Image (cartoon, rainbow, N blue to C red; front, side, top):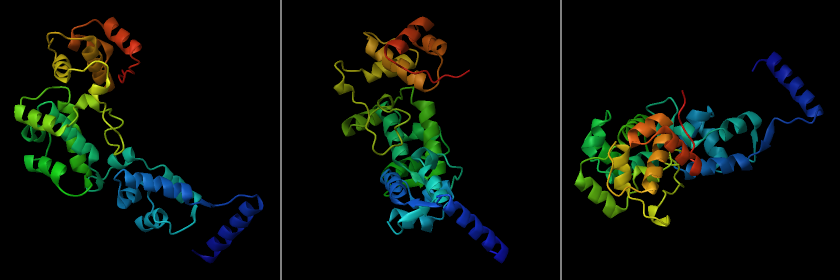
Length: 266
């Protein structure tokens, strides 16, 4: 900093101080936010990438190494979210893998094997295996995006692998309908459990319905589950009705009755 810049900074600092303004704040709330992100499998480097704050500063604040932080640093760090970490434009950066693992296991639960999932991505079967089984809590953003793309392509269509479905059932992997899109990447989120409902949801019937088939013995609970899943994926009432074999007004009635928000936009 030049002598002129230093004098200008000191003058501005004295003016702000005379007006009761400060450039720092207690580090506690920022440290608490960082600990929540780290508890959600975020990394210090990922937080640094998103916030633009040096990783050494992020680490020092997270570890309790300073009692105050500048307002600029505090604002930048408090704006970091797990969603921002997984969506940052850095394909070589690392992101929490929990959401990718959940997506792969959910696809297995409806009959998609590693070969199916790999075919919908730029990844190999071995890559899919490593995402799930390799030690560590992070994967590259490029791999996370590839798995998320496969999930979007396959989560509404049942697969044909009875082996994958049997393995998933034995392991208790929840299917796609058990996960909300806003929660699947949250390490603290829990899947919906059909057994907690007074009626036992038939996941196979729901998946068949979303694939355009009409399974025998279909109940409203399965139809509602299908409407909810398709609506959350951005389908219009008209498109949902055509897929499920019902009129638009029926879809609208189900959404209004069960408070299902439409994710469709023109």
